[in-house]
Amino acid sequence: MSGESASRAELRLPGDQLRLLETVLAAGKPVAVVTMSGRPVELGPVLDRVPAVLHV
Image 1 (tube, rainbow, N blue to C red):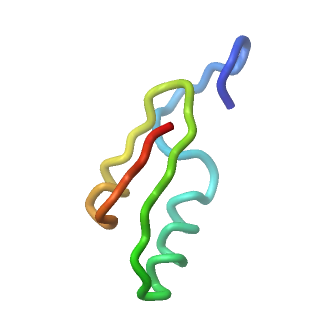
Image 2: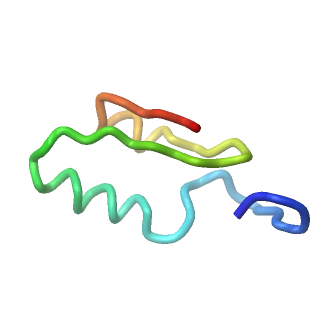
């Protein structure tokens, strides 16, 4: 979703990724989020829920 001619109007995570995170967190296991992005991404809702985020 990054690169030439791939502009986005929002900084939120795309698609159902927050819903996927909620499903994974419901399993009750420790979770570390890894993001791969060539542009800024709004992670506020994620940072409040997980102990670790790695942005690569």
